[in-house]
Amino acid sequence: MKLTVLGSGTMTSPPKRTPAGYLLEHNDDYLLVDMGPGIIRQLKCMEIDLLHIKYIAISHFHLDHCSDLMAFLMNRFLLQENANQDLTIFGPTGLEAWFSAQAQWQGAWLHNARPRLIAFDHQPVQLGSWQIIAALNGHTDNSMSFRIANGATLFYSSDTGFQEELVPLARDVDLAIIECSLPDHLKIDGHLTPSDVARFSNLAKLQRVLATHIYPQNDTPDLKQRIQRHFDGEVIIANDFLTLYL
Ligand SMILES: [Zn+2]
Ligand SMILES: [Zn+2]
Image (cartoon, rainbow, N blue to C red; front, top):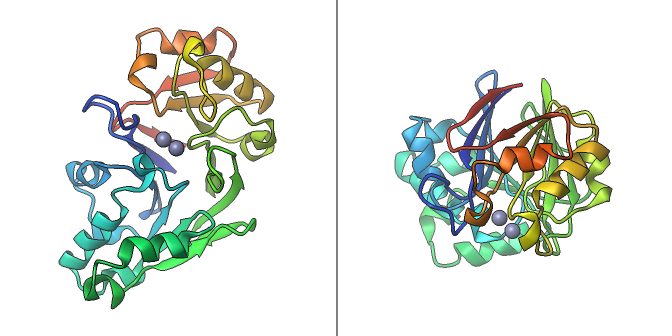
Protein backbone atom coordinates (compact mmCIF):
# COMPACT_ATOMS: atom_id res chain seq x y z
CA MET A 1 0.00 0.00 0.00
CA LYS A 2 1.22 3.47 -0.86
CA LEU A 3 0.16 6.47 1.20
CA THR A 4 0.54 10.06 0.06
CA VAL A 5 -0.27 12.83 2.50
CA LEU A 6 -2.24 15.42 0.55
CA GLY A 7 -3.03 17.60 3.53
CA SER A 8 -1.18 17.60 6.86
CA GLY A 9 -2.75 20.74 8.29
CA THR A 10 -6.05 22.30 9.19
CA MET A 11 -8.01 25.48 8.44
CA THR A 12 -5.58 27.91 10.04
CA SER A 13 -2.43 26.33 8.63
CA PRO A 14 -0.05 28.14 6.28
CA PRO A 15 -0.07 27.10 2.57
CA LYS A 16 2.53 24.38 3.09
CA ARG A 17 -0.03 22.45 5.17
CA THR A 18 -3.26 21.86 3.27
CA PRO A 19 -6.25 20.76 5.41
CA ALA A 20 -6.93 17.03 5.73
CA GLY A 21 -6.59 14.58 2.87
CA TYR A 22 -4.79 11.28 2.22
CA LEU A 23 -4.45 9.24 -0.95
CA LEU A 24 -4.04 5.47 -0.59
CA GLU A 25 -3.05 3.29 -3.52
CA HIS A 26 -2.80 -0.45 -3.91
CA ASN A 27 -2.48 -2.28 -7.24
CA ASP A 28 -3.63 0.81 -9.14
CA ASP A 29 -6.73 1.11 -6.92
CA TYR A 30 -7.22 4.43 -5.10
CA LEU A 31 -8.96 5.30 -1.86
CA LEU A 32 -9.18 8.98 -0.97
CA VAL A 33 -9.57 9.62 2.76
CA ASP A 34 -11.00 13.03 3.64
CA MET A 35 -11.13 16.02 1.32
CA GLY A 36 -10.49 19.36 2.98
CA PRO A 37 -10.15 22.59 0.98
CA GLY A 38 -7.28 22.32 -1.48
CA ILE A 39 -7.21 18.55 -1.90
CA ILE A 40 -8.31 18.73 -5.56
CA ARG A 41 -5.40 21.03 -6.24
CA GLN A 42 -3.04 18.63 -4.46
CA LEU A 43 -4.28 15.74 -6.62
CA LYS A 44 -3.75 17.83 -9.75
CA CYS A 45 -0.23 18.75 -8.63
CA MET A 46 0.43 15.01 -8.43
CA GLU A 47 -1.10 14.56 -11.92
CA ILE A 48 -3.60 12.05 -10.56
CA ASP A 49 -6.44 11.34 -12.99
CA LEU A 50 -9.52 12.36 -10.98
CA LEU A 51 -11.62 9.90 -12.97
CA HIS A 52 -9.44 7.08 -11.74
CA ILE A 53 -10.57 7.54 -8.14
CA LYS A 54 -13.53 5.27 -7.34
CA TYR A 55 -13.68 5.35 -3.54
CA ILE A 56 -13.77 8.12 -0.96
CA ALA A 57 -14.06 7.84 2.81
CA ILE A 58 -15.09 10.95 4.77
CA SER A 59 -14.46 10.83 8.53
CA HIS A 60 -16.73 13.71 9.58
CA PHE A 61 -18.46 16.79 8.28
CA HIS A 62 -16.14 19.50 9.56
CA LEU A 63 -15.17 21.54 6.53
CA ASP A 64 -11.44 20.96 6.88
CA HIS A 65 -12.24 17.28 6.08
CA CYS A 66 -14.96 17.46 3.42
CA SER A 67 -15.31 20.87 1.77
CA ASP A 68 -13.70 19.81 -1.54
CA LEU A 69 -16.07 16.89 -2.07
CA MET A 70 -18.77 18.70 -4.09
CA ALA A 71 -16.15 20.52 -6.15
CA PHE A 72 -14.52 17.16 -6.83
CA LEU A 73 -17.82 15.76 -8.13
CA MET A 74 -18.30 18.77 -10.39
CA ASN A 75 -14.77 18.46 -11.70
CA ARG A 76 -15.38 14.81 -12.57
CA PHE A 77 -18.70 15.62 -14.24
CA LEU A 78 -16.99 18.22 -16.43
CA LEU A 79 -14.40 15.65 -17.43
CA GLN A 80 -16.95 12.90 -18.09
CA GLU A 81 -20.71 13.34 -17.72
CA ASN A 82 -21.56 10.06 -16.00
CA ALA A 83 -18.35 9.68 -14.03
CA ASN A 84 -19.91 10.14 -10.60
CA GLN A 85 -22.07 7.05 -11.04
CA ASP A 86 -18.87 5.04 -10.68
CA LEU A 87 -17.92 6.66 -7.38
CA THR A 88 -18.71 5.31 -3.91
CA ILE A 89 -18.56 7.57 -0.87
CA PHE A 90 -18.45 6.13 2.65
CA GLY A 91 -19.25 8.61 5.36
CA PRO A 92 -20.78 9.26 8.77
CA THR A 93 -24.33 8.54 9.86
CA GLY A 94 -26.50 11.14 8.14
CA LEU A 95 -24.47 11.05 4.92
CA GLU A 96 -27.61 10.93 2.72
CA ALA A 97 -29.14 14.00 4.41
CA TRP A 98 -25.84 15.89 4.34
CA PHE A 99 -25.35 15.07 0.69
CA SER A 100 -28.89 16.09 -0.25
CA ALA A 101 -28.52 19.40 1.58
CA GLN A 102 -25.29 20.11 -0.29
CA ALA A 103 -26.72 18.94 -3.60
CA GLN A 104 -30.04 20.77 -3.62
CA TRP A 105 -28.75 23.80 -5.53
CA GLN A 106 -26.58 21.88 -7.99
CA GLY A 107 -29.09 20.70 -10.58
CA ALA A 108 -28.98 18.05 -13.27
CA TRP A 109 -25.23 17.64 -13.49
CA LEU A 110 -25.26 16.01 -10.08
CA HIS A 111 -28.76 14.55 -9.87
CA ASN A 112 -28.51 12.62 -13.13
CA ALA A 113 -25.37 10.82 -12.03
CA ARG A 114 -25.14 10.61 -8.26
CA PRO A 115 -22.41 8.68 -6.50
CA ARG A 116 -23.30 5.68 -4.37
CA LEU A 117 -23.46 6.65 -0.70
CA ILE A 118 -22.74 4.30 2.21
CA ALA A 119 -23.39 5.65 5.69
CA PHE A 120 -21.76 4.25 8.83
CA ASP A 121 -23.82 1.49 10.47
CA HIS A 122 -21.26 -0.22 12.74
CA GLN A 123 -20.39 -2.84 10.09
CA PRO A 124 -17.14 -3.22 8.16
CA VAL A 125 -17.36 -1.74 4.68
CA GLN A 126 -15.75 -3.15 1.55
CA LEU A 127 -14.92 -0.59 -1.14
CA GLY A 128 -13.37 -2.57 -3.98
CA SER A 129 -10.22 -4.06 -2.50
CA TRP A 130 -10.32 -1.68 0.49
CA GLN A 131 -11.75 -2.86 3.78
CA ILE A 132 -12.70 -0.15 6.27
CA ILE A 133 -13.65 -0.76 9.87
CA ALA A 134 -14.98 2.48 11.33
CA ALA A 135 -15.68 3.45 14.93
CA LEU A 136 -17.26 6.54 16.41
CA ASN A 137 -14.61 8.64 18.12
CA GLY A 138 -16.57 11.36 19.96
CA HIS A 139 -15.02 14.36 18.20
CA THR A 140 -18.52 15.16 16.89
CA ASP A 141 -21.78 13.19 17.27
CA ASN A 142 -21.01 11.08 14.19
CA SER A 143 -17.27 11.46 13.57
CA MET A 144 -15.25 8.32 12.89
CA SER A 145 -11.79 6.83 13.06
CA PHE A 146 -10.85 4.16 10.53
CA ARG A 147 -8.88 0.96 10.36
CA ILE A 148 -8.14 0.37 6.68
CA ALA A 149 -6.79 -2.87 5.23
CA ASN A 150 -5.55 -3.65 1.75
CA GLY A 151 -2.41 -5.75 1.89
CA ALA A 152 -1.14 -3.62 4.78
CA THR A 153 -3.17 -2.16 7.64
CA LEU A 154 -3.50 1.45 8.60
CA PHE A 155 -5.23 3.36 11.39
CA TYR A 156 -6.54 6.87 10.78
CA SER A 157 -7.62 8.71 13.89
CA SER A 158 -9.06 11.69 11.99
CA ASP A 159 -9.93 14.35 14.59
CA THR A 160 -10.41 12.88 18.04
CA GLY A 161 -9.79 13.48 21.69
CA PHE A 162 -8.04 10.81 23.75
CA GLN A 163 -10.29 7.73 23.44
CA GLU A 164 -9.10 4.50 24.98
CA GLU A 165 -12.01 2.78 23.17
CA LEU A 166 -10.14 3.33 19.89
CA VAL A 167 -7.12 1.28 20.96
CA PRO A 168 -8.42 -2.03 19.49
CA LEU A 169 -9.03 -0.31 16.15
CA ALA A 170 -5.38 0.75 16.01
CA ARG A 171 -3.66 -2.26 17.53
CA ASP A 172 -0.83 -3.79 15.45
CA VAL A 173 -1.38 -1.72 12.34
CA ASP A 174 1.54 -1.13 9.99
CA LEU A 175 1.07 2.62 10.27
CA ALA A 176 -1.11 4.83 12.46
CA ILE A 177 -2.00 8.27 11.14
CA ILE A 178 -2.79 10.21 14.28
CA GLU A 179 -3.83 13.80 14.66
CA CYS A 180 -1.56 15.97 16.78
CA SER A 181 -3.32 19.29 16.75
CA LEU A 182 -1.99 21.33 19.63
CA PRO A 183 0.86 21.38 22.15
CA ASP A 184 0.25 19.97 25.64
CA HIS A 185 -0.16 23.39 27.25
CA LEU A 186 -2.90 24.38 24.75
CA LYS A 187 -4.90 21.14 25.00
CA ILE A 188 -8.60 21.40 24.10
CA ASP A 189 -11.36 18.79 24.11
CA GLY A 190 -11.73 16.78 20.92
CA HIS A 191 -8.10 16.97 19.81
CA LEU A 192 -4.80 15.34 20.71
CA THR A 193 -1.51 16.73 21.96
CA PRO A 194 1.97 15.15 21.65
CA SER A 195 1.59 13.49 25.08
CA ASP A 196 -1.82 12.11 24.09
CA VAL A 197 -0.38 10.70 20.85
CA ALA A 198 2.39 9.00 22.80
CA ARG A 199 0.02 7.58 25.43
CA PHE A 200 -2.37 6.25 22.78
CA SER A 201 0.50 4.80 20.72
CA ASN A 202 1.83 2.94 23.75
CA LEU A 203 -1.59 1.50 24.58
CA ALA A 204 -2.07 0.31 20.98
CA LYS A 205 1.49 -1.05 20.87
CA LEU A 206 2.20 0.93 17.72
CA GLN A 207 5.54 0.68 15.92
CA ARG A 208 5.15 3.52 13.44
CA VAL A 209 3.18 6.72 13.88
CA LEU A 210 2.54 9.52 11.42
CA ALA A 211 1.57 12.71 13.28
CA THR A 212 -0.66 15.02 11.28
CA HIS A 213 -3.46 17.66 11.40
CA ILE A 214 -0.90 20.03 12.84
CA TYR A 215 -2.05 23.46 14.00
CA PRO A 216 0.43 26.34 13.63
CA GLN A 217 0.80 26.49 17.44
CA ASN A 218 2.16 22.93 17.40
CA ASP A 219 4.26 23.25 14.25
CA THR A 220 7.73 23.59 15.73
CA PRO A 221 10.96 21.74 14.89
CA ASP A 222 10.82 19.82 18.18
CA LEU A 223 7.37 18.29 17.59
CA LYS A 224 8.82 14.85 16.94
CA GLN A 225 10.90 15.00 20.12
CA ARG A 226 7.86 16.06 22.14
CA ILE A 227 6.04 12.89 21.03
CA GLN A 228 9.10 10.65 21.43
CA ARG A 229 9.65 11.87 24.98
CA HIS A 230 6.98 9.34 25.99
CA PHE A 231 6.97 6.85 23.08
CA ASP A 232 9.78 4.61 21.80
CA GLY A 233 8.38 3.72 18.37
CA GLU A 234 9.08 5.47 15.09
CA VAL A 235 7.51 8.91 14.75
CA ILE A 236 7.16 10.68 11.42
CA ILE A 237 5.85 14.23 11.19
CA ALA A 238 3.54 14.53 8.21
CA ASN A 239 4.18 16.98 5.41
CA ASP A 240 2.14 17.59 2.29
CA PHE A 241 3.17 15.13 -0.46
CA LEU A 242 5.04 12.88 1.95
CA THR A 243 4.84 9.33 0.55
CA LEU A 244 5.15 6.15 2.59
CA TYR A 245 5.05 2.52 1.48
CA LEU A 246 3.46 0.00 3.85
ZN1 LIG B 1 -13.06 18.08 13.14
ZN1 LIG C 1 -9.92 18.67 11.46
